[in-house]
Image (cartoon, rainbow, N blue to C red; front, side):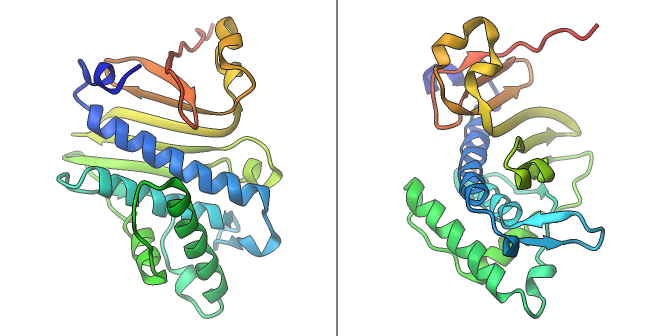
Length: 226
């Protein structure tokens, strides 16, 4: 589907394009970290939930892309992480690692000519502390949905949604390890053996899926639950 076709009848076309780009870029960073995950990449929150370098990096990239692609929009995002742990003594190595991964991901993508400092990264992480509310527009982000699956080298997702006046109007789900052909049993041959799926939907426009690295979108139908 061309970009022009995607715009027709979709009042959230610009937001959808930005969200897809943000999730895809975050997923690339997550793929890289998962391939080379090390024990030193894992921290623990107070509740002992595992938090990886990819959590922070994913959140920063999503915030960065949304701000870059939608510069005229007020920006509010509710996300999981803040920079408190990364500002503590002894966290210097991990914040340097996160910053390097983010900058390398940006360079490899080629969309933006910029380089973030460590303080830029910490500030971007704290950009996810919006309180939201029933009025206005608010992005909702889970930078890695399925942390245990991520650590095991299994399935996980980067999940992003948009609330407008308290209503969910848009959603994008990046699944880096999900074979594209598994998303449509009736048309699996057209997807080949590509790994990585990007699901997206806007209110009133239905749901679609495409390859994480980009492909012709296909309508996605969820089987009825009896």
